[in-house]
Image 1 (cartoon, rainbow, N blue to C red):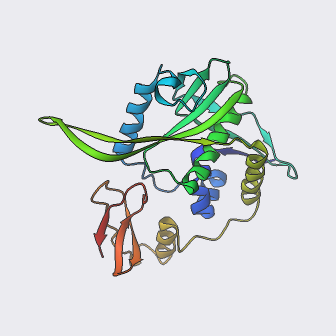
Image 2 (cartoon, rainbow, N blue to C red; image 1 turned 180 degrees about the vertical axis):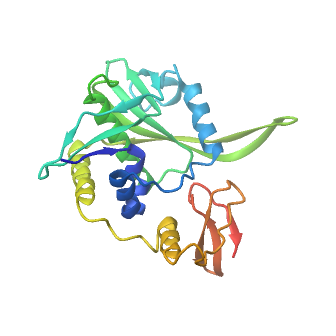
Image 3 (cartoon, rainbow, N blue to C red; image 1 turned 120 degrees about the horizontal axis):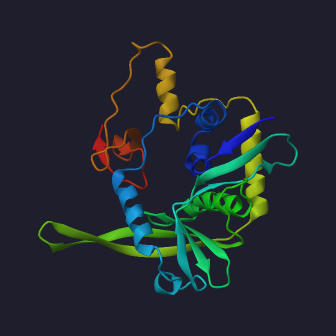
Length: 266
């Protein structure tokens, strides 16, 4: 009986972007080559977690009930989750950003995002937050536990101003925006049912139009001497780029768009 390990982050862009690569990773242990976030995003997130640790919600997010940022960067693992209509099970394993302990002894799970908020992004990231909430409330034996989780939300940081504060020092300034995610466990379990159904089924076909790694594998089927176009790196973050068609013809766009908007001429 399959028991699938699901990473909260994989339930967002990997699952929606390429189910072929998603199944290869979860079911067969074959991962896409690691790109990772540009180091600056990881640095910003780390600084935010350190800064907000121990802060009262009244001081940075009045939309939340009174409480204090109590936990950061904790690993979680859920108990096995049974999906109705299948004998397969799954479990959640990952690491959350921060958790607020409210004065009423309930908890809020928050994620930091360096980006401008949008409904589409929030819907995807909401899957991560639901996964963390379920893992915290229904953990595996000896795993980290917090209950009840009463709030889920995203703290978006969108830099819009640069200021030099001293010789050799500058500061990025921008709006911090809170977006609350309505908790809907039934909808999330239904979503997990679809995920498990994909994993239980045959390997989905390669996403030859949307996934750079599927395109690469298809090109390499002819052997090591097959022609492979040189893919440039982004001038802003050094991530691989993707060839796109625009109003004035083809151009190279950062593969991490819209979080990074680097471009090159084709």
